[in-house]
Each structure stands twice: as structure tokens, then as C-alpha cells.
Image (cartoon, rainbow, N blue to C red; front, top):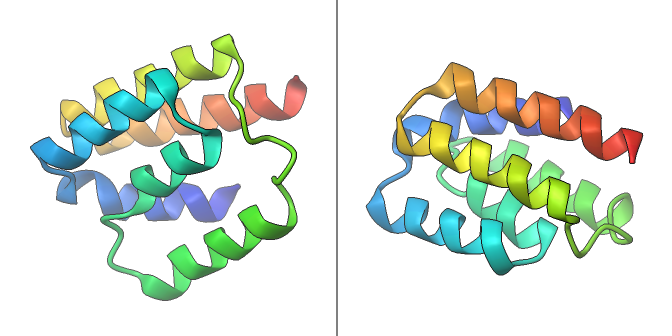
Length: 103
């Protein structure tokens, strides 16, 4: 979802050690929604994150458990966030979204 890309763009520079550790843990053992919610959590645009949450409620309920491929993609996103590389994080998320809709 393009809205999530905007949220991540805003969130990446605001992630700290604790939130990155949470993302890493969720990439290995959390629900898809929990991972994406934590990824966007530092976003300063409340209306944007609220809209994304509502989209999860309505559109993606069936995608609660990520596949092994999705977990690998989540780890790529975490690596980019850990490096503070907003462009790489957005690119990894864009690739993840595309792959998710192809599955």
C-alpha cells in the first residue's frame, strides 16, 4: 500500500534501538500486522497511521501469518531500518508489497 511507504519514509529516521529490536523479533516470530504496525509506529503523521490501521482492519485480515518468504523480506526491511537507510527501507517494503500481492 502506498500509504505505508509514506509512513515508513517518515518513521525510519525515528526508529531507535528498542524499536529496531522489536522489529527484528517480529520479523522472526510475529504476525504480519504486528510487524507492519511496529514498522510504521514512529511515523509522526497520526492520520496516516490511523488510515493504515483501518486498511488492515478491512483489507488484510486474512494475511495474519507471514510466509517464510515474507519473513525474509521483513528481515531485509529491518536491515535497512537498522542502517538508517530510508530509501533502502522504502525500496525493500515496495518489493515486499509487490511480492505479497503476487503470492
